[in-house]
Length: 292
Ligand SMILES: Nc1ncnc2c1ncn2[C@@H]1O[C@H](COP(=O)(O)OP(=O)(O)OP(=O)(O)O)[C@@H](O)[C@H]1O
Image 1 (tube, rainbow, N blue to C red):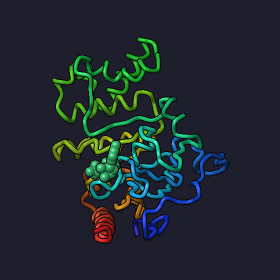
Image 2 (cartoon, rainbow, N blue to C red):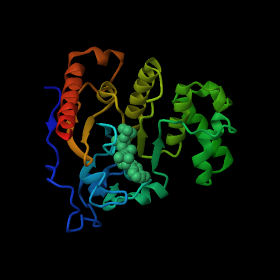
Image 3 (cartoon, rainbow, N blue to C red):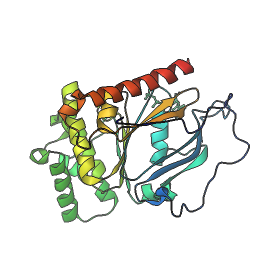
């Protein structure tokens, strides 16, 4: 079989109670895959907003090896974005800990080792494409000449060499997302977190950006975590698909995608692709049925 399915890390408890004992917190992960630069580890993550007896995420533990491309899929409101935000230190767990490369995630964020791409490109309208990409380097106090050189190299990598002097209002949605991707890569982070980055784009642009993103991932060996509502997109891009359930949010299942490493337009026509799509769809319907 081209792929394997892993059962959920832990069976859900009958009621969303807060654990009496604290989840593991510090302590070196010496000798484990969690030490690799770019690895992400969630340790006993709980998240609630206000009421601890109604957590949005319950006891999520999960390890993402460095260099993986992991897509996260699940019903609306199951906590995908919340989990992603905690992986990037944009939100704090109510309980538990996120570690990257064997250290608390806050260290990686402060060191600009995590890039972000969201559904909206969030570009500065008054700055050119190049100067938008330079922004994170300005925050790092990188000198002007080096900023320029690195931004141009990154824009070349995402296929926008000809648009460096344009302004956001002059860009198509797909071009704007390419700029956002270049901006997320310019600090050379080992980890890039993407929350439905192509969700607002037409299908043809989305297909092209997906293949370009996959090629970019293969060339750079980054760890990418990608939230999406599209099963085919998740299968086409990923080494692993994480299926989440809701009420409360949890990782229900992980599915390894063992399609050939090089993904092309042809990949979405091979039988193994349809088998993987069916497997993810069945897993999703199964968990959604149980969550009703
Ligand atoms: N800042 C907040 N305050 C209160 N509740 C929040 C906050 N952020 C998220 N939530 C709640 O947490 C739950 C999970 O939200 P989240 O955005 O993570 O889900 P999601 O799976 O990404 O959803 P979607 O697929 O619709 O984007 C939702 O019920 C949401 O209302």
